[in-house]
Image 1: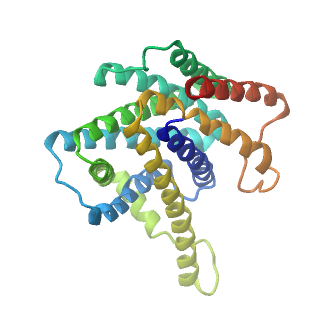
Image 2: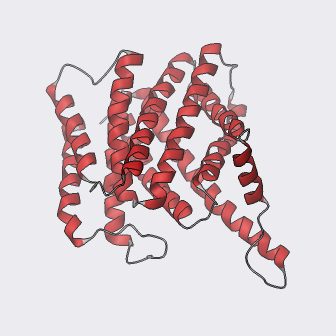
Length: 313
């Protein structure tokens, strides 16, 4: 097994945890709306400044342009994703977004990078489509037309952002450069979002929001409330950052279409979490597998695993 395949598996395990945290944050109104959360998530890429001591070269014009394009694609994708996740279970939303993203990555790779699935062996094509079919079947498509439109949009922009990241790594001389400038572009795009008056007002209000606790020490209560929110959001961002680094290492070392197809392993983890954790922590974890869904989702998970083994074992 190639090292970058292991990177994908670790990254997707962490991503499964991040997505369940995202579901908690947007569905329990930890933040006022999905636009604010998308802003926070993009802006917190500023922690990539910690890469400066490792040596960062000044970007070329091409790197700058593609980094901004990747940042815009990323922001749009997570905004549409969070909006869908707010009203639907992660086990329903994520597979559809992943399936669309996989197809989007394949098409974008062919059009932009002039590459697609590796050739020379039918097992790549067979395994790839097992993964896609599994991702589609694992969801019951319990969505409105509006929600489905959001899901398709999120998947499309996720796939595009992956391909743009591959271009950035091809343009830069080191992994640190590609990572740093793509993260700084996220910060720039997030700050640009504040130019929209309604977004600026909502973010400003959220940062200065008073706690509903009418205790005799409202200042302390406000501080605790903000600290708790910051801990939840920052902790999830750190976890997402670690996962993202693993995925970036995989993208740099492997085929971007296959890396994205292996997002399927994330759904296996979510499926397992849903089986074991919804009874242990129901207030936090509302990903429940109903009896009539079990065989359906189990079959889809098996297809995903088959696709994985066909491709890489």
